[in-house]
Image: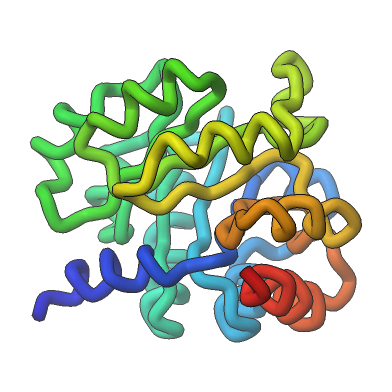
Length: 219
């Protein structure tokens, strides 16, 4: 079985998806490769590299190194937005927003074996994107988040109603999720979450990852 097929199998079992947001990382003077190593070793399942306003050359160099780190620890590595960077860095997949290229176009470049995910902000998008050739969807923001300030939080009840509509692919709750507000999500059956600051700004990453996984494994 090819390595990328193994990664798709791993995706189905994944619970904790971590976003390495370069803007946040630079603001707090953190080392992105040290973070990736700690997060991978601590037991997170998926790591995404999200970036804005940096050169393509630097983006590719960072992505290539992150790809090597995550591959060493048998984790899934996802590149945000840029199909060319995902392809050239040998990432396991790509995450697309509503303004990015179509999933069908990304498939022509990455092929069927790579993972492609997409962000969902409404019930209509959820139903439409679930019919596309995506491997997973992230739904949010569930709670108020600094990154998506213009979007109204969905809240746990609306999220619960939405996820009942889709049962053919993994769904990750995203947006403002932390260890203080994860319990309401767990109680309604959410076992997959995507977080950023709650992990990368935590002073004890191994403990934070372990606690997130403990909560999610209750579902």
